[in-house]
Length: 89
Image (tube, rainbow, N blue to C red; front, side, top):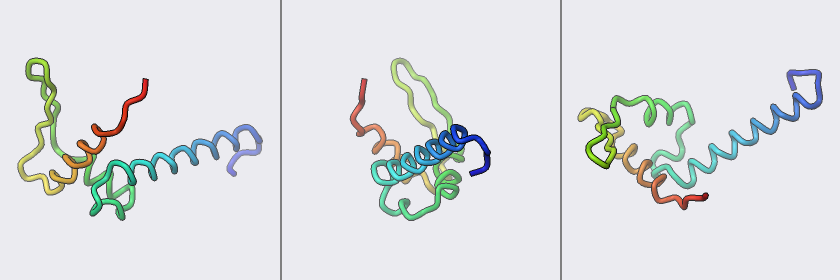
């Protein structure tokens, strides 16, 4: 590892393992089938870096996405898959 201290290296390894496990969890449970083989950098540019805004209307919040968004269906399906996950707490 990059540090000479044992505790520092343990923390870095644990954070890397947590990120790896979160990545696998997100792929298995949230992504549509056609998006699963993509790298995380690709997923970030296709699903996170898209033009849109969150709009409040009355009691509800809605996503307004750009009409020309190529990955609109994949974004909506991913968002619905996240909503279907069981809630804890």
